[in-house]
Length: 118
Image (cartoon, rainbow, N blue to C red; front, side, top):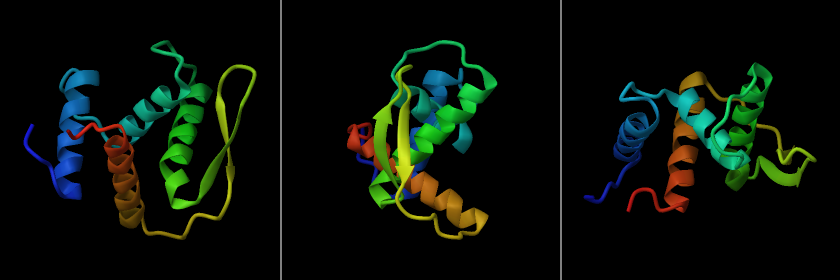
């Protein structure tokens, strides 16, 4: 694979790759990718999730993604194996576009940490 360098290029590559692998070619949106990260972080494999579990999966992913920024810290796994995080500092007040950029950057960083772009 050719070297992908900037955030926009990495984001496009990531969306295309994940969409191909997990969405039958339909383009995944930001929430879809966050959901996939939550499933990965839960580590219980592919299964059907209830509506409230899906919300919790997205929360797990957001905590994991924002942990390197100092907003959350892993706390413990509950008896069902679900990770729990504690809030360390309040999230800044960001405009919707700024929130999107922060999350895309955090997602790209998450995938960089697992050598996805190599």
